[in-house]
Length: 365
Image (cartoon, rainbow, N blue to C red; front, top):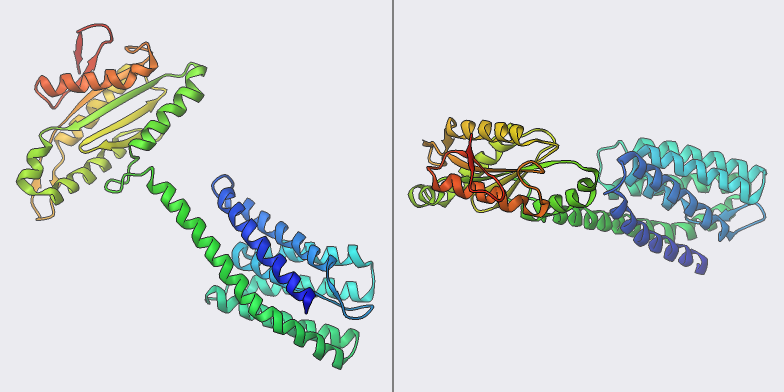
């Protein structure tokens, strides 16, 4: 019993460690790589449990390696389950040599891997599927011990294994679900920290992050960057006349227009209030002005649907700046685009303007 408790402690410790590692890995690797990671990790831990296994007779040992296979099957699917099963089966032979017991158990665990893979397809929750896997394994273990040793030994050994395996199996599934949900929650919070809740565009934090990333990684390579700063004309009047709910709907629809008119690689953000921005990597000043004009024209000709069923027309003013064409110092790129926006707002609105650095010259597209 003491050894089984040791196995339980090892399993739970492994879950905590791998649960947090998976939270980090999922942000950096593909889903398939994560499945391989789960399969290999659980397989190797199964071998560790075999190394510290409980010796029943000269030919029979007991441990809870199947709980690692259950983890692999439930949270990695058939790929992880079969990979874990093959590793554990191979480890059984490597650790204890080629004997009747080793070969029998190796075949048994490959067969269990196949069964687990099939069970993952059932439309039950994790707890039910985990319980089914656990009970099937215990029944098969009983049959193998009965075949290799005796019926009485099979009853005694399986009884002790059941006493620990069933509650620990439930605890294992519960803990893994908790860690999985924790990782999902962290990912959601991280995403929300960089996404504007109203428009689903990038927020100002993500905008700053992209600007800094460009300066750090792409500016030294001589790449160019243009920026559009977009502001809704007389937005306060919309809120005062139609209400803030209507204003929010205008912001949402404008965000959709900006995404549709920007290029795939462009970075569209809501910087706050009624101000939006678009970062245009590898884009010269002329192309940036063309995109800005396309956006201005699309907004002017779009009817914005309001919650009360009515529709309104709005316009936007846009400031444009491009490094290194009209802005020679990268850190002044945003400021120069903001200058262009200021000029557009104070020379009639509903226009695209470029402020030429170190000059009062203004270009209106």
